Length: 170
Image (cartoon, rainbow, N blue to C red; front, side, top):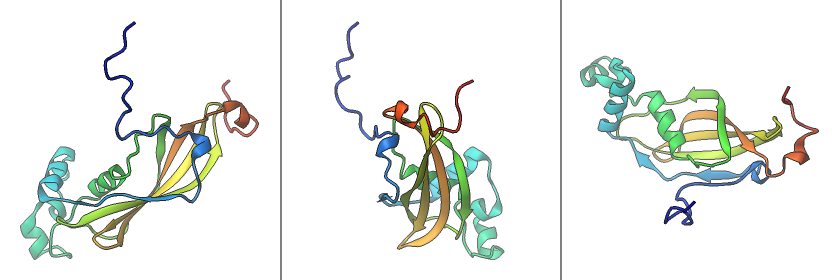
């Protein structure tokens, strides 16, 4: 079988760390990005969220409590986590806990994310469970969103963890 001509070139924007390399307490910060009106409205249309606070400029200015349109919380969550997407080939999303929309985000705000490694524990025969927090900030450091992400991660050496796992195959 012949290999593709570029097979040996490393993939961009991927990681390959495994359970053993996950360091509790490690923090990383993302780049920033400004949320435009076009992105906000495209997201609203895609998910059919046409609430007046996110889609109606007149309502937001004249009747809304913030005096301007909001960015949908689901978009802030998606973009905030996307800023930290690591594309690790050994991890699989297990779910999210403690998602909180702490402060409003408006069209034109600039966001960034801080990811903190919180904990890890052996879970399955081939994979452990890790938990990270995502704190999304707007502008110059105002916390707007908090969530915890659980992921299963392959062990480098599964034998080491077998006496600590929660779930064994039946």
